[in-house]
Image (tube, rainbow, N blue to C red; front, side, top):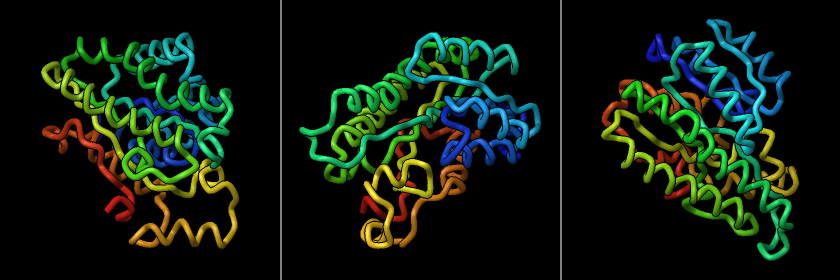
Length: 248
């Protein structure tokens, strides 16, 4: 029960890595707000988790929606100890000069602006409490980019730099900020990363991962639980690669 007594928000929590993180947090004693643009999925997972979990509809790229999410979490829990910025999108693989402006704007809004917005609405609360843990779900794409995903790669590189900058600024105020860098996993985004989901394309992806498998939601949940627990009280500003050796 490493997170007993803690209250957490997990964005993009209704599926994929976010659901894995939410489930692990609940299993370790945390009360979890499952925040997702898929309101029905968020509510269903919250009901499954129990322990006071709540579902919350949120568009992480919209200021008003994030403000409402933060307010509802503070009202429901009294205090927010952990924020996981997991919600993310990608564009389909294509030459960098052929990605539409619409796709570019969407990737930056969901992967980049969201971190700014959640910080804007929740960091003051954590500062007032002189405690808090923020976890940004970045990607190996921000460290070892794959071709044809350039603007997605760039958004995750931004997230890693933001993590380090946030960490050094907020450390004296009692707030830790870390990131995890998963490799591609069995999530709704996998097909988008690969362009097409065939045995041949999967084999090509897996050949770049020394451990020989994709990341799982459980892998992300375990790493996130450690970094957001008091066991990691001396750890801030890291971007932990949870990638089976992909970035070696």
